[in-house]
Length: 109
Image (cartoon, rainbow, N blue to C red):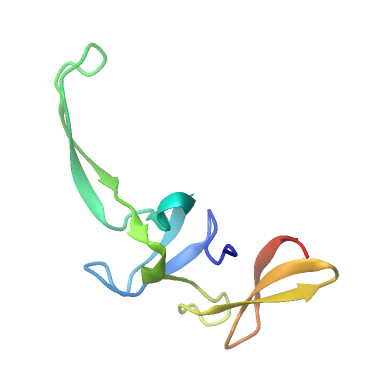
């Protein structure tokens, strides 16, 4: 499957509790078709007291979001967009469907 979403992309959240928000992709989990987005889908993680962290406590961290619920943000419009692929100068590019703006290179064609 082609990489429509990549690490460090800015994405728009289409559905769920964080619908309408945008965030930066921290990691792509290919085997599960999920992405980690900064500041989106935050959950509380309970930390047990250890030698390093004597108090223990709770921290907030992002939980994965399914890739079908996010869209890359078009740099021209600032809105979520669908992605198509084009070959330009012998390289495969991700391209925004509505505006045609380049979203980055995937690799060689």
